[in-house]
Amino acid sequence: MSEGPARPDDFLTALRARSAAAARRIVFPEATEGRVLDAVATIVREDLARPVLIGPEAELRAGLEARHLPDTSAGLGIELRDPSDPALVAETRNYISGRRAHRDDSPEALDHMARDPLMQAGTMVATGQADGAVAGCVRTTADVVRAALVTIGLDDGFETLSSSFYMVFGAEHAVGPSVLTFTDAGVVPNPSPDQLAEIAHAAAVARGRVVGDEARVAFLSYSTAGSAEGPTVTAVRAALDLFRARAPEIAADGELQGDAALSVGVASRKAPDSVVAGQANVLVFPDLDAANIAYKLVQQLGGAVALGPILQGLSRPFNDLSRGAGAGDIVEVACITALMATHASEGAGSEAG
Image (cartoon, rainbow, N blue to C red; front, top):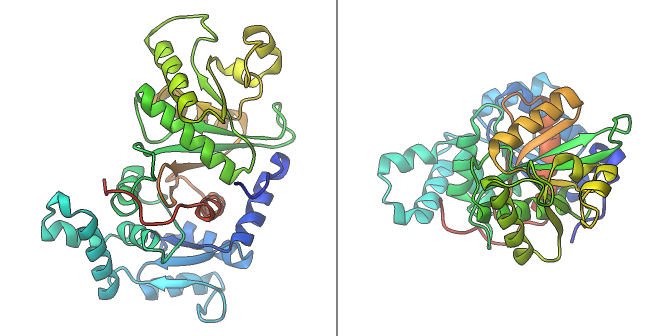
C-alpha cells in the first residue's frame, strides 16, 4: 500500500515531507563530490533522511565544515565511513564473495570490488545497515547498475533491472500540474515483449510508492489501436497481453500514440474505448532510444523537472543519478529512495548478477 497520494501540483514539497516522515538512512558513496555534500547539507537541515557518507574521513569533515556542518556527533544524524577502513573492506569482501561463490572470482577481483565505494554502499543496503543508496553523479550508470546487481540483486518475480524518470510539471505548464513516469529511459536498450511487460510492472509498482497514486499504464507506439502495422507494433501488443496477465489489477492499454495516451480530446477520437487513453501517467516506451530522447526533449523544451533514472526491480533501492545532476536533483532522488525503502522487501535479494 502507498502512503497516500502526493498532490501533483505540489509534488516536490510533498515528496520532501513524506521522506522526512520516513526517516530512512541513505548512503552516498560519492560523498567527496561537492554537489553531494551540498545535497547532504540540505538533507540534514531539512531533516529529510539520515545520511551515511563514504569517503576519506578528513576530506569529508572538511567538506562538511565548509558547509557549516562541522560536528557529526552533535545530533546531525550523519555517519562517516572511510572506504579504506579494513573492517568495511573485509565486510564488503566477505559479503560479495558469498553472493558470487558461483562466479569463481579471483582474489584480486574480489579485493577490487571490496574497495569500491559503490560496492560498499550496496553491501550496506543489502545487509540492512542502510535503507537505500544514491550514486551516479560521478560514476556511470553501468557502474551503479553493476554494483546494485552484485550486492542487492533483483526482487522476487523480476528478471530485468530497468529504470524510470519522473517528469514533474508545474501548474503553469500547458499540460497542467502532473507527474508522469517515463520508462525505460536509462537501462534496457531493446526490450523484448517479456521485458517490456516487466519494465511496465516495475514502473507501476514504483510509482505507487513514490507518487502515491494509482498507475495508468500506456504502452506507446507510432500506432493507436491498429492504425498501423509493423514489428515494433506487434511487440508492443504482445507486451500489453503479457502485462495484463502479470498485473491484471493495474489499468493498462496499448498500442497508443503519445497524443492518444495524454490528450482526452485525441483519445476520444482515436481510442474511445480505452481505459487509460487520455489519462495515462506511466508511459512505456518501446525502446531506450525513444524513451531517452523523449525525456530529454520534454526536460529541455517542455520545462519539466526530470528526476532519475530511478532504478526499479531491485529488492532494495539503489538509485542512479545523471552525471549532470545538481544538488537539488540529488536531494529529490534521495527522498524518492527513502520512500522506496519504506516498501522494500525483506532480505538481501536474489542471486548476484
